[in-house]
Image 1 (cartoon, chains in turn purple, cyan):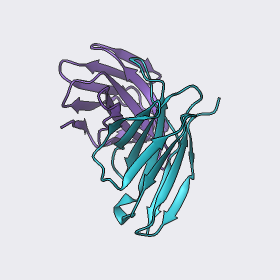
Image 2 (cartoon, rainbow over the protein chains, first blue to last red):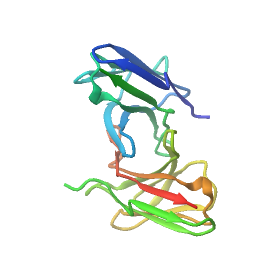
Image 3 (tube, chains in turn orange, cyan):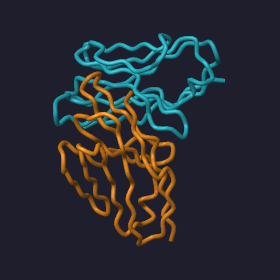
Image 4 (tube, helix red, strand yellow):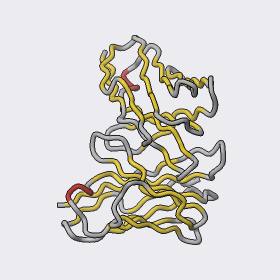
Length: 111
Length: 113
């Protein structure tokens, strides 16, 4: 069974602080995505990680992938309120053409 | 360029009824996938279609069906609606291939009463 676990599920941060969200997945995948979702909205693609050791950065967010450990991380640097949202990781599997989503990490950044 | 468009945006149905949700992919995209997102959970894969053929199916009952048309748009049908079918239904389109990225529509919020 394909499983994805994120932790933490809830994260309350102060502005200016750093933190990391972890994503473990049960089965080797072809690539891994990180998405952001604001309340009542759809999914916004943040990163796609294609290979072992891949690292991508956009603003205060940096994502990395360790395919051997089946682990991806999303690191937040100097958090700001605008980053408050729910973040999902989702490995993609060519067989069936499907994304398997984690439970999501609800991030709240407080002043 | 228009992104992935879904219709309707909101829908209220009664238990036992049937519903059809529609999705138009990004121009040039040939693959469409459907996901169900229950409140407070991550999206769950329902179907993937590529070149009008079903290429993947998630763990959903036969009440759920879909199809893809020659213009690559897609419909998701749900029969005999249950209260538990209340969710945000998301459509994603992609080109397919090793570097393909999935782009999501705004979703259809279905409420079953």
